[in-house]
Image (cartoon, rainbow over all chains, first blue to last red; front, top):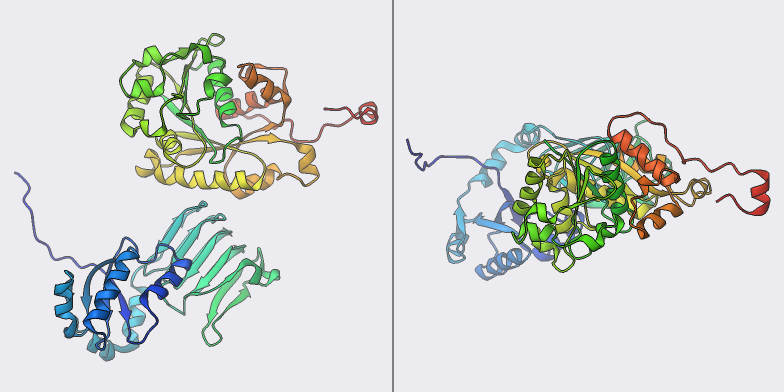
Amino acid sequence: MRPVPKIRLNRYSVMTLEWPKDSESLENWLRRQRKMAPSLMQEIAIILRPSVDHRTEDVRQAVDTLGQLGVGLIGLTGDPCHRVTAATLGLSWLSSNTGSAESELGPTQEAEDSVRETALVMEGPVRSGVQIYAKDRDLVVIGQVSEGAEIMADGHVHVYGRLRGRVAAGVGGQTGAEIFCVTFEPELVSIAGTYCGFDQIPSNLRSARVRVRLDANAQVLAFTSMG
Amino acid sequence: MAIVVTVTSGKGGVGKTTSSAAIAAGLAQAGNRTAVIDFDVGLRNLDLVMGVERRVVFDFVSVISGEASLNQALIQDKRLEQLSILAASQTKDKDALTEEGVGQVIKQLADMGFEYIICDSPAGIERGATMALHFADHAVIVTNPEVSSVRDSDRILGILQSKSKRAKEGGKVNEHLLITRYDPVRVDHGEMLSKEDVCDILAVKLMGVIPESKAVLKASNTGFPVILDAESDAGMAYSDAVARFLGEDRPLRFVAPKKQGLFSRFLGGGD
């Protein structure tokens, strides 16, 4: 029997870029984020959600800019007023009613979402020049992370080994994300975009067992020894 | 089936070609049919170190492009019957290396009964280097005891475990660390990383430590693989390294500063 093409309904999780009115320009925002996570929003499907107040021209420009930055935009979502814009720009329109769903379901739904996927477990050593990104989940590295390597996760990051590279937790803006490490010597630490270099890490915690959290009020990283 | 051993480092000038020549000659000396291939297309050097530069007619690229047969291009070593050399092309560039072409040459060598195929990688992480490590079963990472060399080795190890054929098929390339140009006196003075530091950073099993030695330059200049110079410290250290690669357990030599006698200390000798 020759195989025949089939149509199937598959569910994929796709990232949505929320773009509120009067926010800083998407270009500046993305360039800043990419300093922390150079491969952010590359080679993955992205949907843009402009606010209801954005004009067609604003959206057109934003789509151009994102295209130049290598973001693979597949469609628009949000207020139906942008439906025609999507058609004129050759993008898909994804109708959504999550606006109301969010308010109905509230925070419990969010909590469930965040534990839905298990952690990405990587066996080290993670070598210089290697990038690992655990999207929408935690990252666990068994072994060392070399200088010049980058490990990132939207959730927590755990390193059971010597951490000498760059580490970022809460890459997608999750301020509750934390970093746990048994031998802490990183080049750069970041949680939800707040970062600091090796020099700013308290010197008594270098090479120690360390937990890093984001103090959301002060917008600084809080380092504690795990003994 | 032949075993493919890639000698690589990331950084240039650390001793890849010297080590390739030594390892190939050492394996042949131990009775294994061995071929050594120079992947540094455009900057060929292995032929010089092996002392066959006057005998190169056809090369690796001419075999890949079909201008010559592998038999025509292989140069049989005059000292070791079991050893053959496939030189790089000096006139072409590294784009001449294709995955299919390299794969075919390696397969033909295996079919001819070669037991070990040593791939002498060029420096860098571009095409020549990635082609040299693509078919590797084992990789010998050549590192000098200094930070930039160690970092580049770390980088090439990452590439090895992500881009090689074995890695892509879900396996792992066997890693061996070879520290070259090691000077125990300078390590003692804190001017050089110790072998423990290097092993700690790279987390790879140590295959050998080759001391900084005048014998190496002399051997290269005279086209005589240093491992065949059984009197020299570097030659002995390479012999140990090859024996360890073949599964023998040998203690490290030449890793502590030489004890100087009273006389040589007064006379400033001891080298």
